[in-house]
Length: 312
Image (cartoon, rainbow, N blue to C red; front, side, top):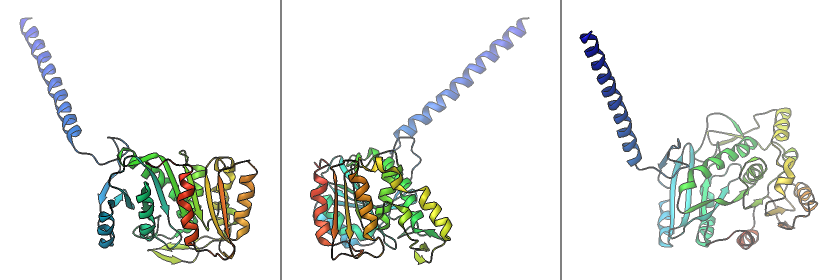
């Protein structure tokens, strides 16, 4: 009997020691993890990865640094990003730059410097299939525009703890395909932009013709047949959410000689928005304009944004 008691006592002691070692090990691990420096991300448990990558144009970096602007190039998950902001800024509203078909993030560097100096945290990124984000698969341009919604959501999550960026207040600025990406995000994403600026872009996807695709960074002929393209546009059509779009301050540029996005598409959008009684939209029609954005329009963007966004 004594032997059984002693054996049971030994087993209990052994179990207590084992449990203590196991618990102590987990606590040690947690302590080590808590002490590990973390990149800016949505939370300490974020699975996003960020790698600093060199800028393609080193002269740009030196130029902006001399003007008290910080310019960084990152790979956030699989999204190549350039960020540009005032070194002294704190919680500056974000401005996303969304490029057109066959474009890339670098095209906005000079333009973004103006907004960074004005107090915005500027984010430029390559849409899927473009710039440094090429794919061996054929990607339709409308598909890339739609996928930009999840890209923007991911980037907003990543920058949430960045002390320079205010992810609760952000602008979507898109040209052509990038403008369509802005409209899609505004219609279907959970977070509402503070303002939208689009140039030569369509909110009504059903009115679009298939402008082609990209593969390995090069333009391709359309990858889808007409029926598939039309069905995709109906499914993802921003104008189907006109009530949601009508809540957002909007500035739209339309060239009257644009053969890609014809004026009737933009005029239809204006009529639909105005019929909701909204007062916070501005449509600019350029009698001599085509699909390209004019300097005169670009000069009007910042004054428009300042009406709706507080800039420190």
